[in-house]
Length: 144
Image 1 (spheres, helix red, strand yellow):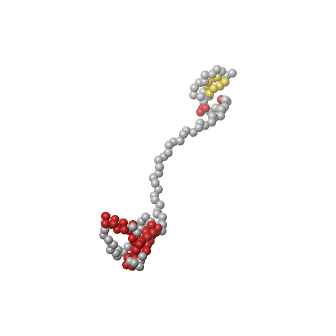
Image 2 (cartoon, rainbow, N blue to C red):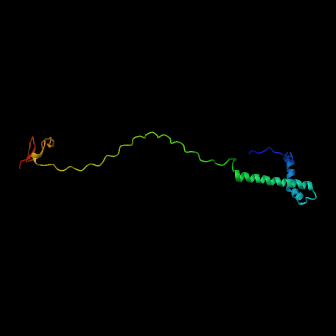
Image 3 (spheres, one colour):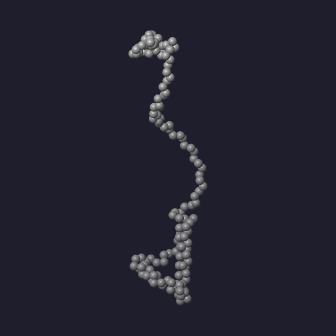
């Protein structure tokens, strides 16, 4: 609800030193003196009463703004809206670096020394440089 237009006129139009003179009279306690002797100045006492009511109203407006409204005029928070759709998947990332070379395998078992069990795939490609060994097309043969 919006505020209504103001219904009152300014009490005075004094500024500067003229306004300071009014403040000096207020600071001297003349308004309180009128409130203390309402029978002597009934018209002024009624005015002081009305100003007091206005002051109470302003204090309530101030309390409302500070405690109920806060830093800005805003309404209550509404309900949480529905969850949005899931977005599309991102692009596939780059391939990672090649891993380290694995450990060397175990040594193989010793082969046979029986020349009759050797096939051509197990024959050496060069002649051995040993004594008491004979080289032929079937492999190495002991001569001892």
